Image (cartoon, rainbow, N blue to C red; front, top):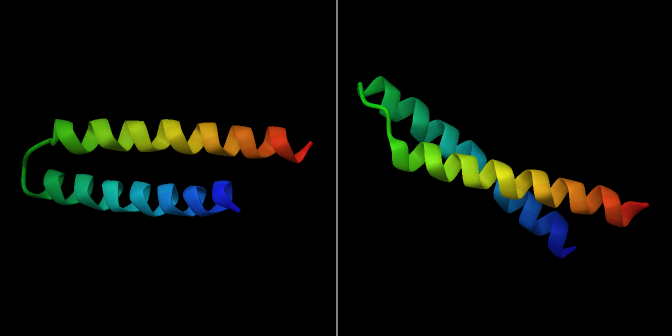
Length: 57
């Protein structure tokens, strides 16, 4: 249950990060901060999915 909950949380965080990235690009600047966090969230999400698949077997 914890893995699923954190997976959903990470998914929401990624969506918010993408929204923030698009907004910052619309304003005319590329935010390194948002890009870094988006990269971290994606990495965590991949690790969660991988561990979930591994535990499922």
